Length: 307
Image (cartoon, rainbow, N blue to C red; front, side):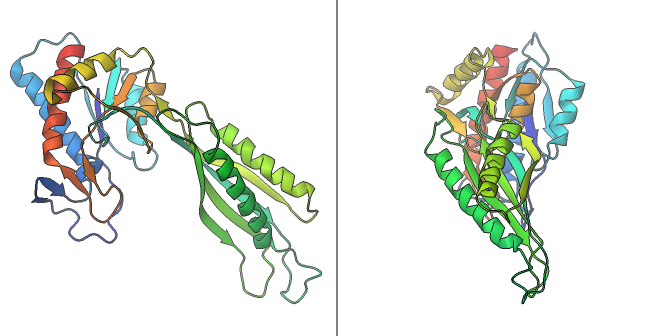
């Protein structure tokens, strides 16, 4: 299976996001790199295989999926209907072979206070100030993560507080405060494991402050991805890469999450490779057109070897 998603992120701040422009060998526009360019390369590779009349021992499938930028309902639907031996996810990798990428977990932490008139300090408990203790503890946790064990390709796990909301009015002690946390995970780290780390911090804070009340819950998670140690797809991809690029294929870890994790979890021998470009999720997005030609050739050669 060749896999590419059709959905894009938003277009805030962009000028003519859906009017493609070619300048200096680059195609500009929303989705150019992420990842309509890859989808075009997949189509070109399939046409090349068909035009060459290659007799394939197996089926070659193209999955042009939706919703990868949010909940991946497209690839989830695909893997429920069809089982494949191997899959190449063509997310932008700068023409490196992506052997792993991080996962993520979204958590919500809520601190509980006691609403009271702003003048009645003896009655109110400020949930926002309680959240301040949580933020300091999470800062310490992130430093532990960044300075702890690292993955050979992905580096350390990381953590950030992405959303924060508390209180109702200026003259009322905040009764509750909520923080949404994103924790980027390494292979082998689960959402429940991450939740346990955060809850342990909350429990420690509660022991030192009788007014501190807080709880955490797991909102959503996606597993990290790591290619099979004995992948049979990898030698075919490396051979196709060498034939087209004239050099050995560099291996890399990918910083962002992709549908590769879902395909691998469903049993497919999965690897990533995609084009060169820039401006992912930003106001100026582009893809290098020559890298798309190279990618199409690599995919076609890999199919001819593997299938």
